[in-house]
Every structure is written in C-alpha cells, then in structure tokens.
Image (cartoon, rainbow, N blue to C red):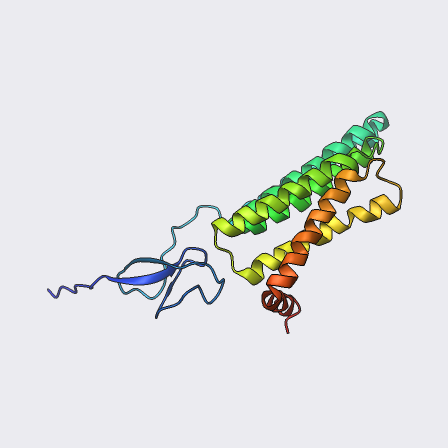
Length: 230
C-alpha cells in the first residue's frame, strides 16, 4: 500500500471570491479585497459544501409564489372592486419583499453593495406607498433625506471597516450622490413642502464629493474608467 502524504502549506486566500492566490499579492486580483492566509493541502480548486436547494432554484420558487399571489389577489380584486386599493398595496409590498430577498440572496458577499441596493428598494417602496396612500409627501420631505443621510454614514463606515479599494468606494459614492441630487427635482416641482432636510443631505453629499475630487482625483478617474469600460 502506497501512502501519499500531502504537505500543508500557507497560501493567500480571498474570502470574497473563495479562491487561493499564488504569489505575494496585496489584494485579490479579481475583486481587490484584502487577502487572508490559510493552510492549503495542494488541491487546485476550493471545495464547496453541497446545497440541497441552490440560490437560483430558491429564487425560482419564490418568484412562482409571488406570481401566484399576484394572480390570486388580482382575481379577488376583480370580484371585490371595493378592496382594490388594499390589494394594490399588498401586491406592491409582496414585490418589494421579493426584491429584498433577491438582493440578500445574490449580493450577500458584498456588504456595501447589499446596503446600497437595499436602500434603493426601500426608497422606491416608500415613494410608492406615499403615492398609494394619497401622496401626502412625507416620503420626499422627511423619510428619504434621512435614509440617504444614513446611507452616507453607512458607506463611510463600511468602506473603512472592510478596507474597500478607493475607486470602488468612489463608485458607490457617485451612485449615492445621484440619488441625493434627485431630491432637487422634487423641490423644483414643489413636491417637497419642507425642503431643508433634503437640502442639508444634498449639501453634505456635494461636500464629500468635492473632497473626493480634490484629494482623490486619480482614484476618481480610475472609477469612471471602470464604469465606462475604458
């Protein structure tokens, strides 16, 4: 009987991509995340635990449940027209719950991307809820400015805690800033009856953007080039 003894060695490992990196690298060549060290037995590929239900299958099941819910509630609304408004709110709520689970299911390895996408979903849900309940404008006046301010703080903390690469941080900041600037449209169209929270949020984002342009111009150009595939 021949016994093969495999010598365990220390290699660099990317916890985000779940791959081993050969050589000495400062960051993962695929995602630019910080690398870790782990014992390696010489196998070429990482071993993943088998899943009883894959993420894709899970989302297909969830999508079917959503479609079934929409069909059933639509039929109920057809038979009971008085309940149409309540049914529409339930249908929209079900869709945003589905979208929320979709984001968590497929983007959970990237915390900042998950938080950003969750914020977009929440803002859309709040706007639609305000519209369906009589458009009292509480969404654009108070709630959305507070959410965007919280997103700015979360972006700064997560970027610092995860040591996010500068050009990736700038990409998320650009997206957040665009969402903040959209608030000016609501103010210009007189849809925001108390614009000061929105103005404060926009001002803070513009100040942060100015700091990035002045102190990180090279990283800004790199982020723009990556997004435009230059």
